[in-house]
Length: 201
Image 1 (tube, rainbow, N blue to C red):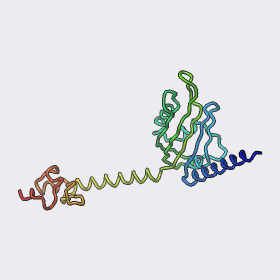
Image 2: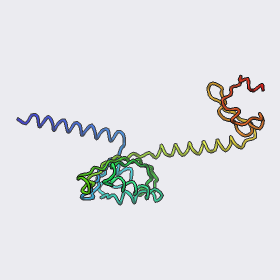
Image 3: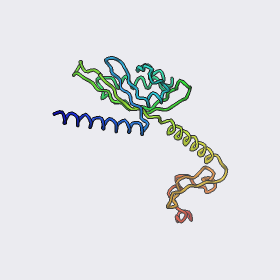
Image 4: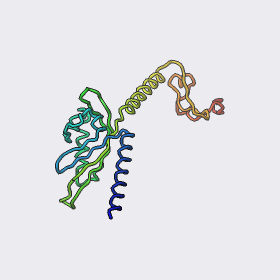
């Protein structure tokens, strides 16, 4: 009677299908590094992010080489720390890559290295991780920083007085022109509302 074995095999297949669907839906790339053979498995999603072909062999050195030069040392150092038997094996890093087609992409990488042995015999045997393309998020963050920088420059240099306040009406900020017009420093104005009796003194 092999009923139990068949049921276990079917349950495993269902679990694997659900995992595959979840990975595809989240557009997460998966990789696994076998330290003994130095072979790296990269899922189709991971290969697509990096612009690698389906049958192109990938090594750790290829992953580092694809990294933008400005981020390469930082990624290399993080990988060394992750493989260090004295550490916890955790990798959590964001870095840029240059795809073969010239496109620049931001990737978020999280991985866990597993070790075997004790003491001086402890050594890395396998690293498993996920990769997410976060280019749109990083570009949005950079656009927001540029917008805030432009606003701050305008706020500080314009000749008209500008005062900002919160929902209660309390002053949060005032540009140099407003401070000069009112004859008050920002510290003196912050927290005051239009009805604050201190305006009359």
